Length: 358
Image 1: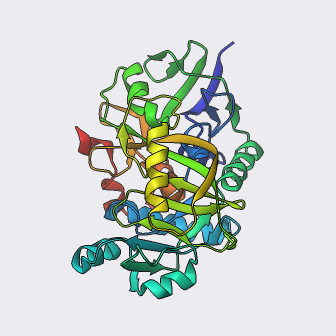
Image 2 (image 1 turned 90 degrees about the horizontal axis):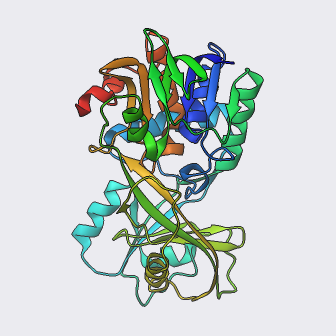
């Protein structure tokens, strides 16, 4: 028996589930995930932070749209955290450039110590602060969008890897048993692989691995109110998490698509860099993991119809910005697919179209 859909979405991370929820009132949607539960890969391994100036200028435009949508539609998703960047050297010009790139304001190291008592004043030479940085309740957002999908009739298939794609005159046939007019490629690190399976050209979307560890630190200070702490040289970041700390080496290691895991050497380096800027030491690692952040060559998302096959739709290259851009990206996808006047702008849409990567 052939399952028939208007739109088949391949990939059930934040990109896939957000576009499925957005389109579900207007089309019959099938949502396909290769793992045994949704958001298995990058979306369940996110640092869960919203920084509106994180990413290039194109990404930042999507960040702002998503932020406004989250505030109006899903007000329980964001919780203010704040961010402090720390620098070991006294190179004022270089640190000022870094601070401006993230929209931070320079503060004294004593002010930084008041906001984050675990900071080591012996090693910290400069600091910068931004108040409007937020935790994202990623699980709540995923589950909220999942409920929207189900309430609007989306069929979600787990353990459903797409291994075969055929094209008839006006239909996609997936795994010889799924028929759809439109195929949305929201498969993250596997986006190029899915395109090749459909006999289309890849867009050189490269996965990069990033590692994290949850650690207990030796301190009597309350951790829950600490801001996000980052090294200005991008060698580490840390944030509170359920009475512990999450520490990352902020690694950017190119790799092939796979179910990623953390390497001990990367975790050890991140902890070493973290400990060099704070007073308490790490007592133990309680867990560790890694996720894949997939970038197009120009670091902007890829959203739109394939130049060679308009019914193959790209929604990929989210990089480390998936949760920050998801509602804007799905809005752009809906506007293109429904061929209507964009709620964003034509100029913004053109920045993400796949044909720029030919």
